[in-house]
Image 1 (cartoon, rainbow, N blue to C red):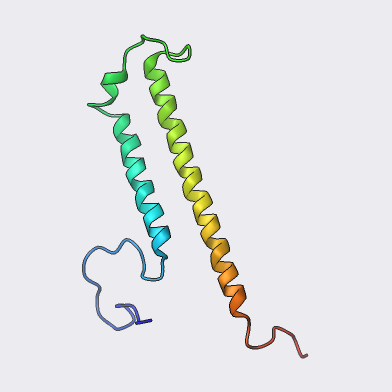
Image 2 (image 1 turned 180 degrees about the horizontal axis):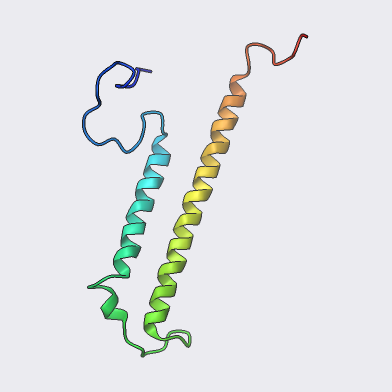
Length: 111
């Protein structure tokens, strides 16, 4: 693996959102999360929110505007849960890979 630009003594060019050692699946998951977050944020602003700002018709007994906000909250909770569980699974995979490598010292304390 080649050393980072900082380790080589030069300044990296361009925007760097992730370090080079972040797995591609984690990068993809976080990028999709940001897209979902932006989409949900857009749901709550003009020009999208005024389309749902009426009190009628009722959705599950709630005014349409309140139902819209609740849908946005549920979507955000789901996306946060997806991000968290994905990061947990990635951490377990990394631990399993590190455990398979074994230790060269034997791991014992010879006193």
